[in-house]
Image (cartoon, rainbow, N blue to C red; front, top):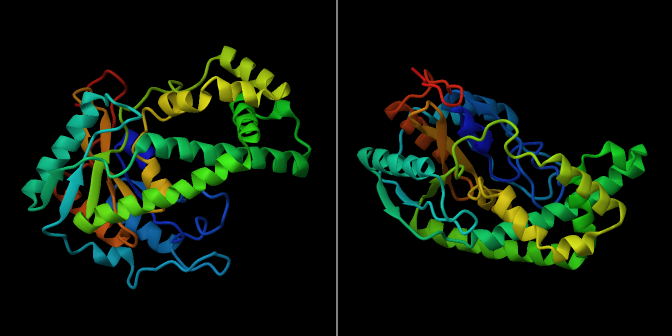
Length: 322
């Protein structure tokens, strides 16, 4: 929800793990919650009021809101402690617009009476990204095998990238996946320690301006090579080539900030407070502690009051929004 929201000038809330019925279904260890992007904060609150609820098939009991989210938007927060950072080991040079978005949000928050302070990132985002991908690759391996067994699908019916990821996950084995899963506990502890000092972590949502369609797609040559690697079970070759680090750099370089909330299961929002001179939106992210969805919505509503965005629409690349 946060990445598409950041690229389109919309509001996006990622719920904490287990609140939405779909997100309560265990489908792999790293679960991206289901949700919505909307033009207003109130629209998101109303939609989540319809989505959130207990699920008897869930593997743990989440803390559900006592009152509807939409009923809580009439009050505004005060005196919040917010730590912000644009630093990333995955992308050491985020776009100047991403930096400007966070700086603008920090000034706006101070004008609203909150305490804002620049901080060091409370986690190692390079290590987290490697662990995130290790778990994800292993899950793709299992999913491809399951789909083949259930449907009889041939390799030609899968995308080349999917086959290469599945082969890498097969070669990496269970040990790498379990080590990555064990490492997630350290990210949970680091974020919990951060939230003892600050209410929210503020970062860019994405590290670049919104990419043009097709910018992240691999070439036909890469696709052909990926199919060959899968066909010859070349996972060892992929491992020796450093493909995991390359995937971290190239695949997550434009989105290095969002994996933290995904891995730890914490709620997070993207708020469209910044626009480039070319009329492109750029959201900023707030990561909250467990159970802070209601407070995140209140903060987003306060920012929406201070700087409304409902009348703004992204301009085609290179054109003015006026």
